[in-house]
Length: 209
Length: 209
Image (cartoon, rainbow over the protein chains, first blue to last red):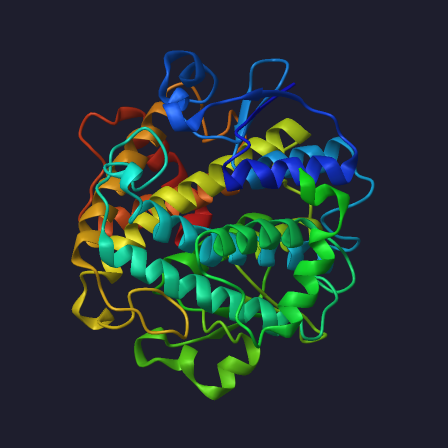
């Protein structure tokens, strides 16, 4: 099993934190997104979608999408669970993971890729070229702020994103919030719950992953 | 357990097909998206995100996001599986489901909501107002076409989206393709594999759901 990673990108970090929390040591190959290695012939054979993270199984099967990779690792090593202890809890974790990915992380991607000079013609990840849309960068920023607010509200009566269980929903939220801070959309001053939670997840040893 | 549905919208149809394939009969409440019932006080109490589908459990917990709802129903009634028989197969089903949702279905949403007159100020679903971005409608169309092509390629050596198992990835793909056809992005003439598969899934009794 080989894990295709890029230490500077947000999405693969989600898998690295997930694996660290499970105590899994994955054989890792770095793909240099900066120089466009993801579009090279060699990596295209691994993942024709030209994105990391990707997990290549021993039979050559390639898993991409964080959700799919983490679900596979959860089945491989169920303890400690990062998904939930009951069907209800697992469904809530999946729901929050999806919401934060679609509203927060994709919002940040929209903001970043539609404004950064280096992403001209590459406003979406993957092999196809898409021009930047400046209004989409601005819309992305608004979505990110709405998602930060929603998370603060959810954390007002939950220790973690879903109740008292640290889960993949927290990992997705953590990587989203760190990406937002780096991209100049800070945690709002009055988001005390989000701030308390962010300090807690950032002090876990997996945060270094 | 109550299922909040809208018969004219694509996303809830995915849950209806899923339930039909499982033989599950869900107590259903119709929400009239056309008149804005999703923004009304009563539905906001069920789902503050103002979207369908939503599944309200008996303790009041509300599940939204198709992935989370279907995962819960899969655990409630595992047979026949619509997710996979092995960890590898389940991960591939999740991967394809996610890819088709993010590239295809969201592409169609972008095309539709950023061009239809009735969606001015509502270019994204949910309670927050977002203006239409005409370039995003055009980009959405391109993404839809790319996703149709990718599906055709995947189906060139797979009976269903993932091997010989009819799964939630097929349901997501079916609802995406039907939405694309309705939105004037037809199956390309040379997409013979996609056409063969589309006829097969459309002839299942669940397609009427």
